[in-house]
Length: 194
Image 1 (cartoon, rainbow, N blue to C red):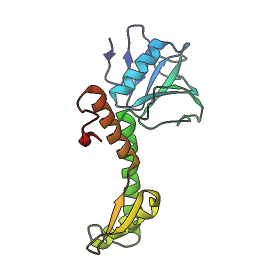
Image 2 (image 1 turned 30 degrees about the vertical axis):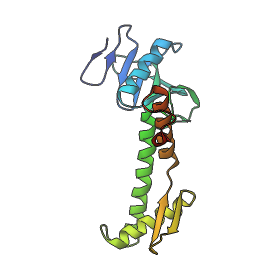
Image 3 (image 1 turned 180 degrees about the horizontal axis):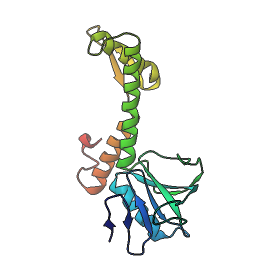
Image 4 (image 1 turned 90 degrees about the horizontal axis):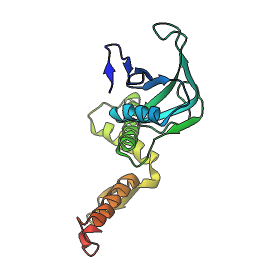
């Protein structure tokens, strides 16, 4: 059971949690027990993120009621962190799973960041937001950046069409079909399942 204070300090039954916020959790430093990992994972999961602990991310309090005490910092992120964003230290442990919905959200956020970058480039080139030329500029930058997943074809009416292949989306669709078959929602013999 956790009890909260207004300033983001929290304490579990054994008094192992010092601070929690939307970016990390700071736990009493000791040989990192399974209970501590469970507490860290639960906190990060409540934020729809994964837990990451790195070498060199210890904390020593220099003020307040915990002065002089050392603690372990666990980062919360929906992106797969390889090195600590704080110290550059190597990963000790994580519960990151690239197939989990939290990770999928991180990948989608990354795609939107790229599109925003294309828009900024087109604005910097002088194209006005909301015009056809701005849209064309953004689309051309996207196509240039994604040549391996984009194909331009000529339709029967003579109009050029763009086909954009998204391997992540295809993978999610195929996994859903497979799960539907395994759970009995769909039969292998049913053509709409494949």
